[in-house]
Length: 75
Image (tube, rainbow, N blue to C red; front, side, top):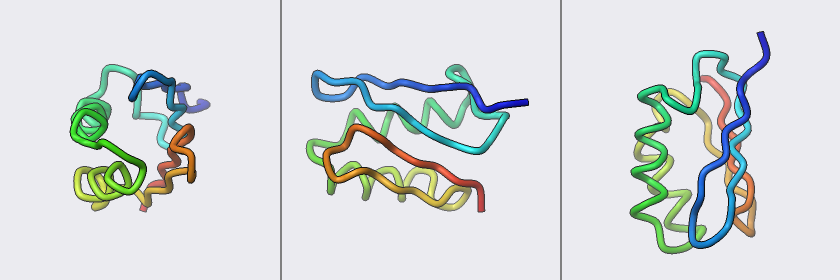
């Protein structure tokens, strides 16, 4: 089973979320936590911080320098 592609709107652009967790879907509780982190962040550095705080216990988080791609890998 391939992971579902997830796109989240943030600051007038679409951010693609790449991940390796087949249980992570657009309607799973983990995505709700992601969306909350995106709502709080005002810049890329803040986005990294909020994502790491929100889901860093389950995933390694990487955010592209321009904020267009977020990578999540299971720990």
